[in-house]
Length: 414
Image (cartoon, rainbow, N blue to C red):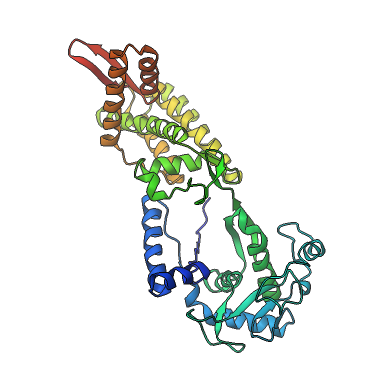
C-alpha cells in the first residue's frame, strides 16, 4: 500500500512464431504485431487493467541487447560459435538454477545426449542463445558477430535498468517461465551488473478448461474476446480473482455462472445503497451506527491484511461479501445519510482496489432478472417445480425478491 509503482510490460514483437506468420501471410512482422498488440490492449481495457507505465518493444531495444552481449563476452560469460551464434556459458555463472532450484550438473547430465539442429557450437547442453544468425526471409540486424537477431531471454535484462533504473522490486510471469526463461534472465543480468535482478518473483498458475490444460489441439482454448461475448468483462475479472494467483483455476460455464451470480449480489447491494443514499438525511451517525461503523472498519482491515498476504484476493473477496451482508442488515430506510454514504464509500473502495468497476450495470442486471423469471415461469408451466424453486433461490441470492400476483410476477430488490 502507498507505493508509487513503475510497471513495465514488454512486447516481444519478433520471434519464431511471428516470423512464421508474417511469411505465411506475406506481410511484415510489424504488421502482425501491430494487429495483436491492438487486440491485447482492447482486451486489457475491457478487463479494466490499467496500462503499464511503459510498453517497450523488443525491436526498439536491439542496440541495448547487443551492448549487453558484448559485456557478457568481455566478462567471460558468453562465447561466439563459428557460425556467429553467441551463447551464454552457464558454467560461468555459479548461481545458475537458484530460482528454479535445479542443479546444473543434473541438468547437463539429463540433456547431454540431446542434440538440436543448428546448436552444434554449444559447449554445454544448458548453454543458451544470446544472438542467432539470420535465416532466409527473416528480419535481421547488424552485429559484431553476424547479421541476425537476439535470443528471447535477453530483452528483459536490457529493459530493467533502462525503464526501472536497475534491480526490480517485483518480476512476474507465468509459472512456465521459471525455467529456463527467468533463470536465464538472472544469469545474464547478474553476470553483467553484479547485482540481483529482482527482490521478489511472482509466478501465476494457469487456467484449466474442465480440469484440462487449455490447448488448441484439444479444442478447449478460449480467448478473453470469446468469454466476454457471453459475460461482462467484470465477471471474468471477478472469477479470476476468486482464486489465489499461485493456484490453478478451473474454467467452466457453471463456474462462470456462479461468478456472475456472486458479482450480481455485490452490484445489487451497491445499487440499494445508492438508492438509500439519495433519500437519506442526517449528517451525524447514531450511537448504533457508530458501533456498526467499527464493524465496517474491521472488515476493511481484514481485506487489507489479506491483500498484504501475497495478494490473497480470494480471502479479500470474502471480506467484501461480509461487508455486503453487514450493509444489507445495518443499512435501512431509517439510516442516516452519514452512515449510508460511509458504507457505500467503503464498499466502492474495496471494489476499486480489485479493479472491479463500481458503475452499476442496471440494464444488464434487469435483463438477467427478467430472463430468469421467464425461465421460472416456463418451469412452473411444465410442472417442474424443483427447477422453479432453484431459480427462485438463485434470484434470492442475487438480492431479488419475487411476488406472485394476479397481474403476473413482480420483483423488487431486497
